[in-house]
View 1 (cartoon, protein in one colour):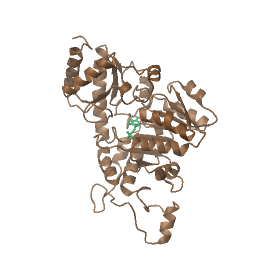
View 2: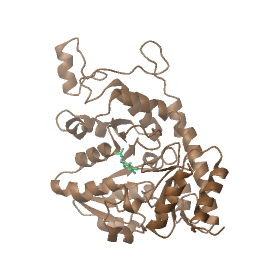
View 3: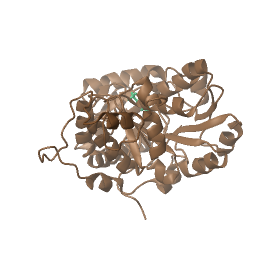
View 4: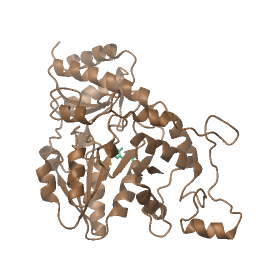
Length: 401
Ligand SMILES: *Cc1c(COP(=O)(O)O)cnc(C)c1O
């Protein structure tokens, strides 16, 4: 039976303080207690339902967290001020000095920079592997390995992780499988496939309006409690706290995510097929030519499609830049990093979001200069968009007329 996570969000029922259809927004950093004893118990983590201080938790943040936990089908979740705030707190909670991480080599540039440049300062080392080759993943595991890290659909190369097999591997070696699911909300549910911890940058599809950064960690109650522990919790002590007002606004945007994902996926599949038909080197998990097309199908939930991200290769960075500038001029989208906006966004990852990755390593992983990453928007008439994009490509000699 295929699982439909959007329904789980729909089934949540929270009223505001005065019967409002939206939960009231909590506007306090600190909370009073009727008795000193309850305050003590709350510090010790033994007073369920009591709030202490908003860096620890707040009603608005808990509402958003619970909605996201329902979406990912995990026991619970905690929201953070950014996606990086979620990733770094999880990894720092799981790893101590001398511990080791095995990570996919095609990951978000910020995560790569953290693992490559920052975590070693704390004595945490990472081996980067081709996540699609399970034997290489297993070969990289050492007795010191604590975490297996990947993105369900990788940034920017759109490689697909075999989450079920990775989860088996993690179990066998007693590791935590941490999956960043930012590129495929609703389409893929990593926890259903065996991931221990699921992370999102809420900044992208989930919020969908490019007006804030935000993050979430979805997982077991024990782990989320650890993150928030007043004595040793990374989320509590490093302080990447989301503001309540923002949590309330993201929750409202989350409710239309299923409709938006359907449209992003519909538009992206349409363009990917057209671009490929025109002879452009196109990568999209919904194309039969994608090496992990079948794997994606075996993991995906019904209805939400293959997501809104696709890449094309136009041969050189110069051509890529010319094309992006022209498309922006014709109002086909914005030359901007990030994803999940109502308008199409495009960027050349090699010189932007993945520029943290050294050039020789970019080459080795197949990140070429002429690569353009598209986050396809919600355009109502995608055929018209395609025709206008094609006109730009013909004008610049990327395609024949
Ligand atoms: C953007 C992004 C992040 C980082 O999220 P922020 O909200 O910008 O901190 C992490 N992983 C992926 C896959 C992303 O696209």
